[in-house]
Amino acid sequence: MTDSKIAAKPWSGRFQQTTDAFVEAFTASVGFDRRLYRQDITGSIAHARMLQRQGILSEDECDAIVDGLGRIQARIEAGSFQWSVALEDVHMNIEAALTDLIGDAGKRLHTGRSRNDQVATDIRLWLRDEIDAISTTIAQLRETLLDLAEREADSILPGFTHLQVAQPITFGHHMMAWVEMLERDAERLADCRKRVNVMPLGAAALAGTSYPLDRAYTAEQLGFDRPASNSLDAVSDRDFAIEFCAVASILMMHLSRFSEELILWSSAQFGFIELSDAFCTGSSIMPQKKNPDVPELVRGKTGRIFGHLMALLTLMKGQPLAYNKDNQEDKEPLFDTADNLRGSLQVFAGMMQHLSCNRERMRAAALQGFSTATDLADYLVCRGIPFRDAHEIVGKAVAFGLREQRDLAELTLAELRRFAPAIGPDVFDVLTLEGSVAARDHLGGTAPNQVRAAVARRRKTARQTP
Ligand code: ARG
Image 1 (cartoon, rainbow, N blue to C red):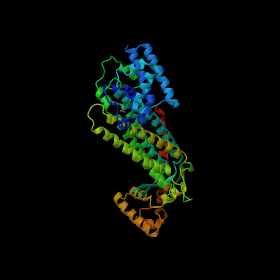
Image 2 (cartoon, rainbow, N blue to C red):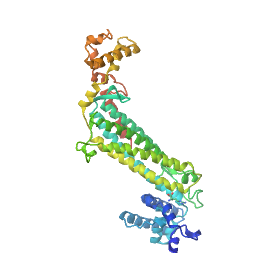
Image 3 (cartoon, helix red, strand yellow):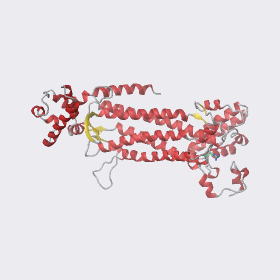
Image 4 (cartoon, protein in one colour):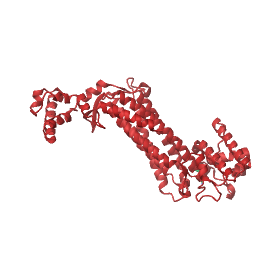
């Protein structure tokens, strides 16, 4: 390595030897943190404007910096910017290019700041944008599910516990369960954003700076809610990134469960739904196959996102205050989490939009497995029989039905009366699937009325969210 290369490193002053070539590559982050170029430039422009306002930079210097950074951004976006591993990271690459372009003024940009507060600022700006984009995608998926719930408010399928037929439910009600989960995910994300949107700039390396900075002004320019209150904390903690990965993990856990249902439901054995061809793939050997790859992949990606959460927690747990190079390892897990979360949500929204339900198959499945047994017990309770006795009576009727291979609704009145003489001809109203779901007509119940009301309520709250 040549002397000119040593000189190229902004920190080379105290060094007598060049960096080992492998160490240079090993310690560099430019391969992945160049993704932060826009946030780095935006942050630098706000910092320069503040320095000028405070009389630390002249107007000419500030103008040259702002103009130079704009040109660098254009070059990066045109693909003609030369990234250098010797310059380690996105911050030093851009700063060196700026000095190259505008001379001495470029060297003044780093006044009152360090890469430690700079990188923390860049990540927060980047994550804030990602959170906003992800929130929009969640809203799109929610809209799709609301439309689907409304369309299928009357469609009946068996509800399961232990994956055994339990009670009839409506498909719309089932979709609304997912809407509730997504709603909480959106709330968690919005809450996480509050803690992301705090500005580290001004913390400098760790202790703050001796220049008379106006941190509130920089924060305002960058849309941060406020400057961070403690310089050590501002440069070192990545809890905001960990929190995002935790929110992402919970969200992916929901999408993974949802995927599992779609995979089961689209199998020949269930046959409840059909995914659009546009969201499935075939087999290279079995011509009949149509595989639910999209939900399978979402379920699979959940694993790596949980892994990223663990990676960041572990990254942080052993670090003394303040900044340590360990933190450079925060970016790849964070980027990958945001990319895959966003992708999963987007593909889910499209897939659910084109989902078709096989109402006959769902209904036929709900007719099997004595799904209205609880309704018969409730009927007996209405005729004065204590619930525990009613449970026992219906259990015996089910055992009889199993022997006869007939569902409760297929037994005759005389047969049913053998188990409880109180049973009248009106029992068949509650033994039907429609009667069973319609009876659960209260807030949170599966009745079609309630599904439509829940959809309307959610549409109203969704409209209020900015
Ligand atoms: N590339 C570094 C990172 O991602 C930037 C901060 C480096 N600071 C330092 N003092 N070495 O964390």
